[in-house]
Image 1: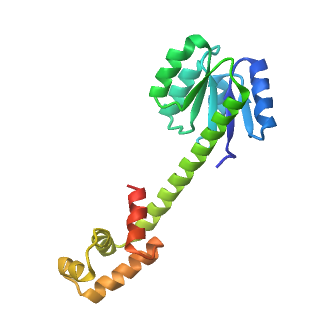
Image 2: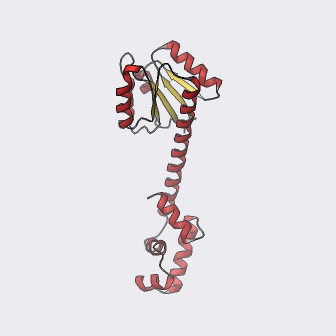
Image 3: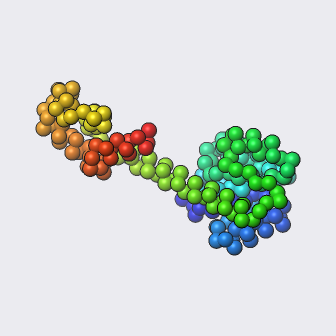
Length: 200
């Protein structure tokens, strides 16, 4: 995965330079592009962090870029920089999944705080997705019988009841249960239920 950073896309060089300086002064890693087309040419699904897009740009607008990235499966949080007349457009972008919009002229500290929040949100989402992928990989190691035992354990059933339902001995249930706990990296049924609930 690429280093998490703020990705600024703005066709106004002076604003772009000022924003880069602002975020670098607050130790926020940043990269910038002069157009939506330039960003798309460099876009990599492994990019992490968040995007700060100007709504109105020459060529492709920030909104069009947002739509294109969404269609490509980009999940980085997006914040829009908007002039006063663009607020209705920005609100409609929020409804489509953008994280926030900031009106020009903006307060420097407020903008930096919002970007730092978006970067933290992205990091948390990536951590959660990595955890889900890890649980899915562990689930894939279970045999069909271990899965059956696991589902009944998570449903709160006792070993004797599980044995009766599956037509196997209690000792066999205990062995399968031990294997499930070992493969899933848990010590209790409650812990197992919690990680399964987290991945839906």
